[in-house]
Amino acid sequence: MRKNRNLIVLNIIVILGALVMVFPFLWAFITSISPGAGLSSTPQLIPDNPSLSAYVQLFDRLPFGKIVLNSLGLAVLTTGFQLITSSLAAYVFSRMPFRGRNVVFAVYLATMMLPMQVLVVPLFVEMKTLGLIDSYLGVLLPSIASAFGVFLLRQAMNSVPTELDQAATLDGAGHFRIFGLIVLPLVRPALATLTVFSFLNSWNSFLWPLIILRTPEMKTLPVALAGLQGQFTTQWDVVMAGSVISILPMLALYIFTQKYIIQGVAGTGLK
Amino acid sequence: MTTLQDSKSNPPRVLPRVSKAGASKKFSPRLRYSLIVALFLLPSALPLLCFTIIPMFSAFWVSLHQWNLVGSMKWVGLDNYAKLISDPMTQSAFLHTIYYIVGYLPLVYIGGLSIALALNSRIKARNLLRGLYFLPVVSSWIVVALVWRWLLNPSTGVVNWLLGLIGIAGPGWWTDPSWSMPAIILASAWKDIGFIMVILLAGLQAVPEELHEAATVDGAGWWRRLFNITLPMLSPSTFFVIVLSLINGFQVFDQVYAMTGGGPNNSSQVVVQQIYDLTFRYGKAGEASALSWLLFLFILVITLIQVRGQKKWVNYA
Image (tube, rainbow over the protein chains, first blue to last red):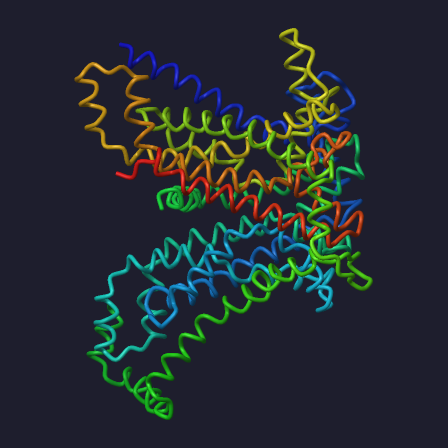
């Protein structure tokens, strides 16, 4: 009986909690279709005359379409590069022993612990020397390799039995073939997890693009959104319209890849 | 596997590879092996070297100088560090950051644990609920900060309106120096609770059911089992959550930048916001780099202390 009562209490808490989780998103959407929101002090759950004028304003006053494309392009490129660089390195750490390999791997892991903030000043100077301030390449370069990705894929590759490689070696396959035809296809779930993580990280990254990008047309969504606040101080409908636009692609990706994301996060905790 | 079978039964497919091996005969097998290792490692090693490792050391070099990012560098030794340690702004930035962590960590841990416990029981629509709780985790900090700024708007926000309905005069949140930090903590806890929940849930699912059954037979109640079985079994996940939350907590920035910018009256000025301001507002790159290093060392020491102390309470079965 007691067990049941606890269960009911937990259920109620969890469902109320879920409402708290969803409400801010819902409210952002409602605000974005309520022109003049923020001027009245009694919020309306159902807008009197819903309209998309906030979205129109957003695209009129800002190169918003371009900004969405910037974010998308950078996220796709970052993800592509990270998949390639990480899987190649992970293969070496999993399959190709050499002297000092453990030390090299430890250095890779150590870079994961470094806060971005420590690197901000010298990286900025480096980019300035290379003439990459206010360029997409400047945003992209520091994130083409990911120690986290190497770690994740190495773990996955280690669980692929080496008997498969040995059989392939007997058949005359070299490392390129074992990598491409045996190991990679077998770690597809880990590749999927890394894809989603890289994409979301890039899509949501803020500090570095904020520092590098200057031209309004080149900014990424989070940077442009942060700037919106200043320009549309009281126009909450416009600010929320921008937020909704930046949530939508992420939401779509999330719905289809939830399994890989949650697996990835749960897996990091177990290590 | 099918490809291997193919190459066995289909000799011509093997031929190109053999000729390729023949072409690379000019390399000894050892050299060839090293070349492959290099070819596979360099695409990640070079960027990590250029954009993480070298900048890390040059940050230290910069921290020993007075420099405004454009002019020439002037050697000042450890002066920047000495200046920072006695600087009241830096001290208060560290205090605000600690305030943030002290408010944030119990909130996400107890919240995340309750949800994980509930979702680990026989609850309906478990996957859907788990998905909903995780939704803010994948959203960008900036969006979360903007949406919460709007929710917590002192005069027209929906939170104060709801509080008003039950007769509470809502505070000024991000416009009030004594409420700016709680506002940031609230938004951050909302965003991260799903992440903590997923990690704890994975830990919970590894707790053997027999332990609970045996304890129930012995007459242990729900709370007793929570404290004597679940929490000790969950200690590795708890340890991970605490280590990670502290590392991330000391680096808190995005939400502060977008919600308050460190204000009002510097009431929410955290360490990373201070680094940002020193570099890009005041042009004090030397001091900013020194502060980055102080923060890094601070995080490192705190993490090491936790790793050391884990033997006392973390229970690896």
